[in-house]
Length: 461
Image (tube, rainbow, N blue to C red; front, top):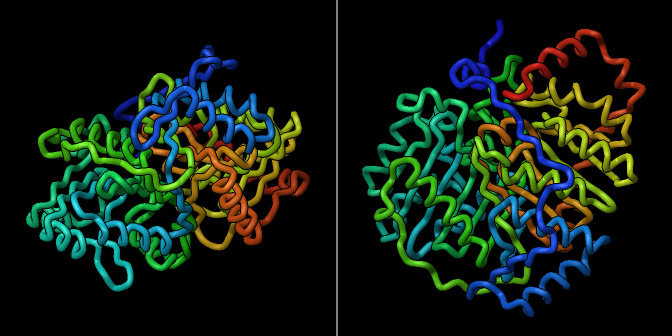
């Protein structure tokens, strides 16, 4: 029996949206001064030039990187921040270890904003117990959770947190925002004292406990119309822990959402923390919102693909590319760029998987290499370009992240972080099979028809 999921139901309430076009070339002054900030504020022109020179030395095409950074600055609306320490967190255990450690270490306040917020546990400790204990110890805690993503979370959990003094707000509740059912807060953010932040694809979902499945679907806005994946499969994902000045941008994004959802500015932390440099990584935080004329993540991703000189390695949980994304990847491959896509062989969303498959033939013909990972559920969202430009966050490679969702992603300009993500990519390929064009074209007709059907709905997937 066909189960009508939230995306299709949302279409009847809000109508179909249209993917914005990113001009080529972008009408942006690429000679404009790129802004770089540190712990003490904006860097001087001389210090900025030194940072950019160091970054350019890591890139195979320094002029292409400089042009892209100028474009990215304009479309993202946020500066580069130097002085950060970036730690790549792999899968649930790494992320939960970092999350619980950050909560334990906080001295003043914690902000948590998650699409799925469940009472997860780590090393025998429940999240709710830890948050309440920290609140009682004087750490002010504010929580935002999404009204659709956390639909299956018992309201008793949030009542218990509120009773302990923790402030909790629901993003776009169904009861009061029925015509905003497609507009979701897909972000995953934890901020501790304005000094440390964790973002990426990992929800506070029991699916990630010890790397095993068993809970609600981490992207529950994608209601599958086929049976769910087998229980207890591991969920593979990537987060970043960022320590340093770039966390200020995450704090601003959280506070904008808090006030936008009816919260009071007086409830938030008014002071600006004295920031200190924690490392030498350069980071740009990109906060996207559904309905933007030029979505920030989308425009910077397309610009990065167009600017690639040597290689583009993508890991995508839900690969339902827009026409411009597909065309940018195909063109990059045709001009000799090594384009690799690591995608799921099975998914919690049957429609998204079918739409994903519908793009294979054209991409393979263009020279794109496609691999499908089969050992568990692939939920990662990472892109590495030329080994020096990386982006990790909540945005999927799909229409929904462009049109409807509020997302958060971090660009890291660093050969070290790029090398680490590429090393993980290579390791993940050991659990994946390459897709061969000749064999792919021989797949059953029924499968092709299913792919064609769901491609018609890809703007809602």
